[in-house]
Image (cartoon, rainbow, N blue to C red; front, side, top):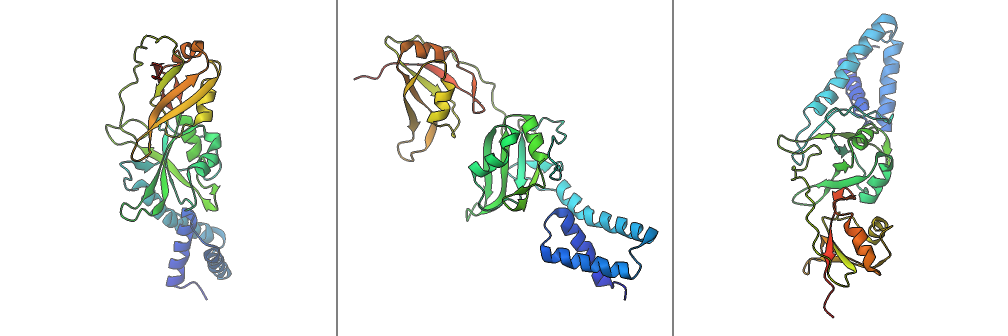
Length: 283
């Protein structure tokens, strides 16, 4: 017998779930069975088949398209634009957005794993995981910012690819009015401060505006060509132990500090770094 009204409705719902990318194996089997029943009754053949499937597909895709278009603001950011269906490549990015919204993530995801997943998209300069304000439970989504618009475009182009066993949902995060492209509040342009006079016997520099992900190896690599690093002292809050985004780098030779201060204002891990001479510590 032909599909009844309830079965037709069920088939449309399953097609919608398939379009959204969250259909289970059992639901796929059920959809296949319903399609087979429909075909056996002659409803799924020739012109009638094409017309019926086209109508069903449009109806199935409509809820997903509507959901994407009306995606609520999260963290003050509206997500928009579709992904690349797992095919990779650069998704259109006419606005030059560098921040993307990622959803349907594994609850085991972390900074290192998402950076590894997006390793071909350039440097990840900012990550914010979305959590419940009261419980702190992870929502399975977050915002990822890249060091370039092309990086974000490539990330959006990876939508649909398998990320830790789940098809990735990835869309551009459109900034609100008055915010910088990328979503975070617009900052004043960086102005390199005048370098202070070098103290006598100076072998140490102060470095500020550092990324909170910086470590000794990154700093030593940044200083390559200036001189050998003797010691690094990161400044932290006395009570919380939280890194303040600055520190002191000591070299073996005075000539090294003259070389490193010339890099004042250069970008290090997505931030223009501030470098200045530091007076020797009192013994």
